[in-house]
Length: 458
Ligand SMILES: *Cc1c(COP(=O)(O)O)cnc(C)c1O
Image (tube, rainbow, N blue to C red; front, side, top):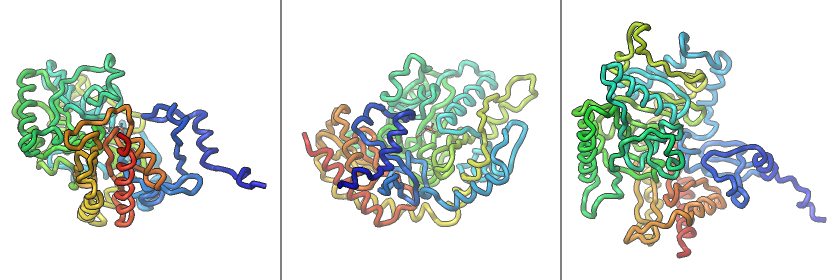
């Protein structure tokens, strides 16, 4: 008798229950007729484990949120301690120690001049807050004509309608275009687009000059320019030179326009410095943080801004200048406790220094792809490394998106026990800061194999 026929398959049972009632994010659910869903029972360090005991190395930090490994005990214990004293209190009219301490520490950790912290509970909401605050600031200053935002081509700032409106990833945006405010798009400084022989910095300055021309054409109409500093993450991990941010800061000052730095993905050490803006030595007028803010434990976001912006709202109630925006869970104490523990982990050891060795190992591990006929570029900013798969590396002719070759890399990697989730045809690493040498070797080996498999057929 074949006993295996009667053996339980806990993965399959969980997936069957899921497919009966859950609608997953960013997913064509019909794909799951043939693409297996992976049910995760637990995580530890850089690893996730399914209900059948199979393990997967989380090379993308579960959508870029996890910084110090899954079920990290330092963060877990901090949340547990907080859970026993205060789970939540509304932040209007009330306050609590975790939100006060977190605000003090975020002000200290971020670039100079960011002295006020407003909270929301996800990245998109933080972007909405920054957009509304900037518009409202100009209104309070007697400049109601400033109603437009400038964003970069290929940018991504989230999925809610305001955040989607200042993004430029067609896959997410095009369907909803009739619902969106129109933003002004400036050409991206993305170094992949530079001319042969042109340096990334020269290209960045050229693109900055084009942005300045756009602001000149729309003088007095613009509230703010919003950018993802150094890496357009959802826009296929395209990267640009810090010279762009240096120019952008000066241009925004010249034209009296706010600069919003969306560091939701790149903040907390991803690009090698604690915040990407540091590499240009600039302070934005607004900085949006989320994702890594709680080490990947709980949803929380923060918008930091200046005393100047804060002061424009500070007045007698009846002037109606206050920023009357809120979310039910604004400044949730559990999430703040997770964020404080995450900052403790940065303070406890020289994480950024240790990441330099990890980043070098990631790059060395994929060196074999340098001359690959279907890899147009290997690019890196600190702990983010991306490999661009194309039909022809010499001409950079892209693969048609319908071929979904990135999905083949995803499937191959899962078979090998690695979670990679390419963005279209761009394979990338954004691992948690606990990944060790052996895990990096597994990761880079698997990526190379996966790219070979995915690009084999013409
Ligand atoms: C993920 C992301 C967002 C949106 O954050 P959510 O928490 O997913 O709403 C905004 N901006 C950038 C740069 C992001 O990477």
